Each structure stands twice: as C-alpha cells, then as structure tokens.
Image (cartoon, rainbow, N blue to C red):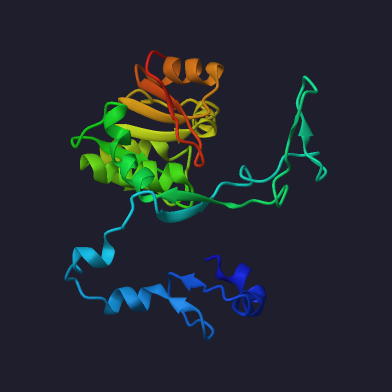
Length: 243
C-alpha cells in the first residue's frame, strides 16, 4: 500500500545502494525485491541453526521508526541545548528534527515474548490488537507477546470504536491492547444496550488519561487496566500494577 510513496524517489535510493523490499502483489520495477514471490518459493524446511542464529544477541534484529521521537530537540539550532542551571550544554544530534530508525536488538525482541505474561495474560486469553504493526507496541509487544504465551490474537486492520464491543463478543476477546486515545474513542461513543455484556477482563497499554480511565471502568465494568510506559529506544519499562 505504501510503495506509491516510495516509487518517485526509487532511482535516488538505488543510486545510494539502498534496496527496497515490498510485501504484496506486483508488478514492481526492476531492482525492487518482491518478498511475496520469495516467500512462495521458500522451502518449509528450517535452515540449520548456524544460518539464522545471531552470533551476538545484542546485534541488530530490526529497525523501527518512532514517529519522529528519535529526532532532534526543537530549537537546538545546531549549537546544543543549554541546561537549566547554565552549567553545561547538551550536544545537538547529527540530524536534528528528522525521524530516525531506532535499532532493536535480538535480545530486546526476545524479551518482548514475556510482555503479556508480565501483565497477567495466559495462553487461554484472546488478545484484540488494532495497533499499527510498524510500531513496537503492535509488532513486538502485541504479536510477539502473543506468541510468547501461546495466546490467540484477533488482528484488526483498523480500529473501529463502533464495532469494538461487537468484535469482542463475536471473537471471545479477553484482553485488549490499547493506546490511550482508543479508550477515549470508546468512552465518547453514544451509549448502547449491553455494553457490559462482554468477556473483556484486561486492558493493557500506554497513554491512558486518569479521567478516561475512570470513565472507562464506570461505563464498561470491572476491567483490570495495566498502564505501561516505555520507549523503543529505551531499556527500562514501567508497569502500573496498582491502578
């Protein structure tokens, strides 16, 4: 779906030695690697461990863009940002203001296998996931997290506040992974009969405002909420277990 945005700059990328990989039906211009064709032709036999096992778990597993959060600080002006106390300065980043790919190691990817276990989910749960898979929350915490506990994942292409509770009932959803705005969308929906008639027991995510948190529980029932905070580039994550 996004190849149309890349195609105009494709010649420049190829001049710089950048290879473009695309997943989806073609046709594509020469030099573009069509992953679907390679997947269809690949053997189902697992390659020997020395082919796919990383030499070092701290080596790069993948890169994730984080909506500009890895860019520079506004107003840095190329001269660094002076601290409040005036006793020093923070050097400006090499490309201020531009989004940059965050490096995710094999170790960090493997650690995401335990995410849902840490928040109290299990293999018996059905997890509802409508977050974009090009971000860490959706891909690593969501998909990899479900693999880690052997849970069923209901993958929604696009979040719909009006369809959410119907989806939960139809699929037997017990766990919902959110970003705060999704809960606000649900609270702002017109009230409907049977809003508490669901099996959802746990909601986990980031960015839930206190007022939305309270309204969500008052309206939809005794759902346990675990609020987390972390960064793609960071190495520490906080969990609010107490509510």
